[in-house]
Length: 117
Image 1: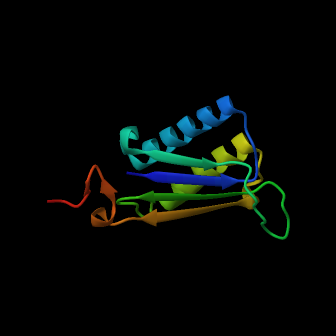
Image 2: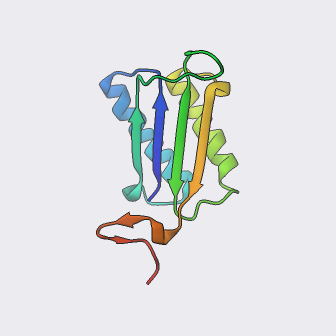
């Protein structure tokens, strides 16, 4: 149920894009202790991003997950910022990350929700 969306003004080859998607999925599943079978990753490359008064390389990423704790945010921030900075050649100070906990009853899947019965 984790969903990660990464938007950047950087570009990648098709093979690098596929590899990046796979690596983001693995990192998030690993840190959150969730099955990668439920991780979804969205990658928006070559977008118009204007940050701190310039169009220099930048990233905005969001991670939504059920049961996401504020205690997970520092670990996620460190790992994702380092990884995205290295892979997309973006300075860490030009990366914003947003983490959101989603209530089980508000996350739909397979014709239902993840609400406990």
